[in-house]
Amino acid sequence: MAFLDRWFGRNKTKDEAKERLQLVLIHDRTDLAPELLEQLRAELIKVICNYLEVDDKKIELGLEREDRTVALVANIPVKNIKRYIPNAKNK
Amino acid sequence: MVARTIVITSGKGGVGKTTTTANLAVELAKIGKKVVAIDGDIGLRNLDVVMGLENRIVYTLVDVVEGACRLNQALVRDKRIENLYMLPAAQTRTKDAVTSEQMCEICSMLSDEFDFILIDSPAGIESGFRNAAAPAQEALVVTTPEVSAVRDADRIIGLLESMEKRGISLVINRLSPKMVKRGDMLDISDVVEILSINLIGIVPEDEAVITSTNRGEPLTFQAVGPAARAFSNLAKRILGEKVPFDELEHMNNKGILGHIKKLFGV
Ligand SMILES: Nc1ncnc2c1ncn2[C@@H]1O[C@H](COP(=O)(O)OP(=O)(O)O)[C@@H](O)[C@H]1O
Ligand SMILES: [Mg+2]
Image (cartoon, rainbow over all chains, first blue to last red):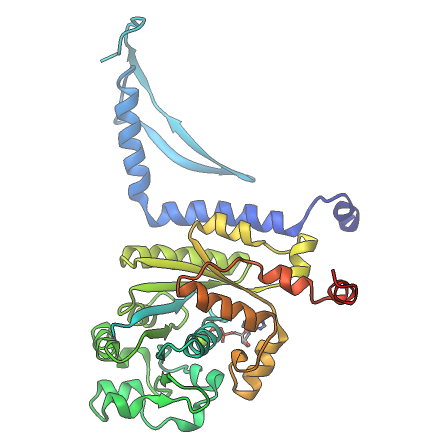
């Protein structure tokens, strides 16, 4: 049925090529520079700590591949939540 | 004169580094620049046959490094065009015959004599690539619009960035307008989006590349044709001229439709 797909403008092999390239490069680039995820993790914790008290020893953070997408998956155990004061910067 | 030193590299083999080096060298010489093309692929030299200078080689880059001859003795002058020289690689040696420091030394000796030093890099990311890239301030990354070639180009761009090269530009080679139109080939915007570096050249798939290599005459010696035109545009862009990226449109106009259009003067 490939010809029908093509007829209707679907299943162009270039779209597949692009999608596969983008996925493989996400992995190549993070494999080559693990510092990138480390830095992201550190900054993420800093921001989260403005709002929540978290257990930073137990944080899991990573890229997970699922079929045709890559997701940034985080598991961050919360120990406590700050009291929310409207119109005030949580510090 | 202080030469602009440019490495032509790709990661993957067979994507058109040597073809680009040879034709760019000829184009720049045609414009009047004094150019030397260095074959950085020691042990697998090819630039000599692509440029058609294989019968004129006496000494090689390795002989210079080892003190067997002076640099000027190893330079092969192209008699067909003024201002064009080639420094051949040794065929019977391995990449370890030269170090990065020695490559830098040779280039600094050439730098006063030339406007451009083009270095044809071997495939791969090991010492051969590093030696070829070491003396260069700028880099042309050549890729074809295929998954494996673009992936390797991404790796090479990362390495060049970590070597702190200033100008890294992209040449997309062997683009087939027909396949792009059908949706069966990554197009220019896809590749540029994925690699996110400055595009400087688009070279269509062109049989003339092969026939001219058969003869040992870089394409750009003879006049026109889609790839020849593309290399001429590349040279102009390297010199800072703003040339529109119409390499593929031009090619399409050469088809039947183009001839009909011409007949009717539209
Ligand atoms: N634009 C093109 N159209 C047709 N053939 C090409 C084109 N560019 C390169 N080739 C062919 O592809 C092959 C590999 O090119 P080459 O320049 O030797 O690649 P590399 O130096 O990267 O290994 C050669 O046979 C060459 O003639
Ligand atoms: Mg080559």
